[in-house]
Amino acid sequence: MAASGLSVAANLEPPAVDAAERYLELARRLSHEFGGPLTVLGGYLDLLRNGDLGETEQLGEAELDGAQEHVSRLRSLAGGIIRATRIRTAGDSVVIAGSTAAPTEELLAGCRELSATLAGWTTRPLPPAQRRALEVSTAKSVQLTCLASQFAYTRTLLPDHGALALECVDLGRWVRALVHAVGPVVAASGHRMLYTGPAGPAPVALEVRSMELALLNLIDNAQKFSPADSTISATVQRLEASAVVQVTDEGPGLPEGYRIRPFGRIDVPAGFQAPGFGLGLSIVSHVVALHRGTVRLGAGPRGTGTTVSLALPLSEDESGD
Image 1: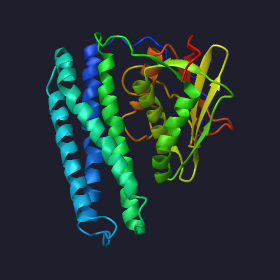
Image 2: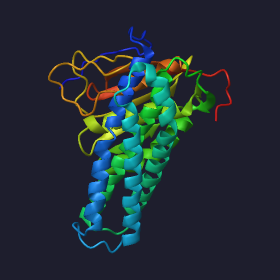
Image 3: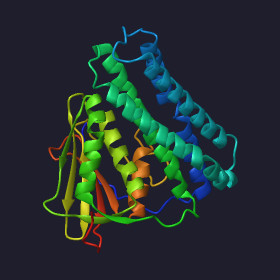
Image 4: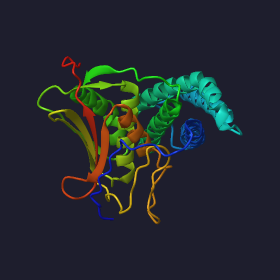
């Protein structure tokens, strides 16, 4: 599929849809997505625990039992969040956001802890089948973390959310640290992660958590659409009045007619098959708009693949760190 070279600005006016309805629709979609990665996690841990992938000499029974209990706890938290979003009206959106805040934070913390545990296990001298099972499980744990992060972020759609909690950071150093953190997960999915930074500092004002979510969405999208053994590149440039971070993949590129809507699903042409709900770029566009920036989609530097560029205004505080 050839790239279209389409360029779409993200600082668009949101459609005339009530904010509470937007929140509730997105929250329902995201919360129901929790089941997929949880099922895969539980299934692979069962295979490991039951010996279906060979003797687990490098993985103790207590460790595997603990991981299974961990997944059961995550499943319970996710189930409570899903139930909270069922059969509700938009008028209940603030109540839902409040009642799910603590379970979502606990779900996020639990997913991060499990991801670190599983990734650590993959460093042991394991048979290929067990190693692959743990790599897939780690990736699914990270996917669940992203979904929970997205769910938490939906609260920013509500009108009484308040202003962003901004801090000045050096965008180059910040993106580099994020790329290094997700590098092992990207490698487990069969891709390479490459980072190129600016010559000097590029201070920007960020709400770090929401911008991290935006970049994780871009990297996740790049993995979905890229062939095995390909490179996903993250580049930061400082321009005269802005700093730009670009994520580029070596996939098939964008189809004609691909459009971002600031809130809700992506408008995708008929016949174009993509995994997921198409919510990732929509959330990215909203995050960037809240930071007074723009997001653009286009072909990769060689005319193939896709490049997503996020342009953020430089901060007046040159001490970004």
